[in-house]
Amino acid sequence: MTHSMPISARGFLVLVAALCMAQVSLAQGRSPSPSVKSVPSASGGDAPAMGVVEWLQRMHAAARQRNYVGTFVVSVPAGNLSSARIWHVCEGDLQMERIEALSGPPRSTFRRNDQVVTFLPESKIVKREKRENLEQFPNLSGMPDSSIAESYGVRVIGKDRVAGFDADVIQIEPRDALRFGYRVWSERRSGLVVKLQTTDRDNKVIEQSAFSELQLDAPVKIHALTQMMGSTAGYRVEKSELERTTAQREGWALGKPVAGFRPVSSFRRPMGGEGQAYTMQWTFSDGLATVSLFIEPYDAQRKPEEVLLALGATHTLTRRMTDKDGDWWLTAVGEVPPQTLDAFARGLVRSR
Image (cartoon, rainbow, N blue to C red; front, side, top):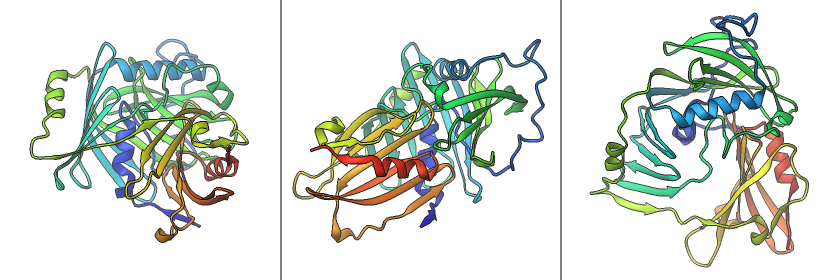
């Protein structure tokens, strides 16, 4: 059974996940926007001829090297809309951001490299956590390698303007049905992603995100953001207790690998209450799309329901698993087609 998720449950998560650029949605049919002009050649002022790895390297570098301030909007075909104001600054290896929600409950999120602090004014709570796998587009933990080209191809489809900036428009096309495609607007001078659409197998847009207003090389001050990030007076501070681990140590393995996806991290956190129960998060990536598997002991008192949830490009699958050691509850989440989550769920096995 498939359900639609309200954007309030994930809308701002998507914005935080976007961080240095854009994500996706707004059903616009099966072809590029009418405003996109075709590119007849790669000469003159036209888009350079590059492979998918080179394009992603350029976008990745722009996201890490440019300061900017902008308003970022995420929409899905169901009509849900979320927006945020983003301040982003780079100084050497230091990346820092402030993201202010403009829709939904008030929320301010600050990121300093892998340290993330979220202010919730209505409840007077501050959440501190460490995020090593920052969800960006391109979603690259490091510079992209040639393996991405095994899963995706690329072609230039035109040029356009977004938020007043000239942009090259490219189509990143999946080579199988395990992942979505992407239509990307890359700012011509810097390579920064200013608009992104996620497309399904029929080339229909299932999610869109874009800057509605953008100031490149804005005078954002790191010390000012640092002061704001540390101003927790009057708030109750909650620190996430994440512990690095491995799937093998926790007794899990993927019996049948999912093509193109590689494990990138494993963490566990206490579930709370009595006992020593933990939830393990095992994250996989193909260089663009990410899938996270959350595994915890099954709790019959909670009466969980096996469902498939959908919000734009993001799907969530829940499933009860049984083995000789007892029952487990799996929650698989990713911006991938539902059959990809099913492949992960079917391949997950106990290794001890």
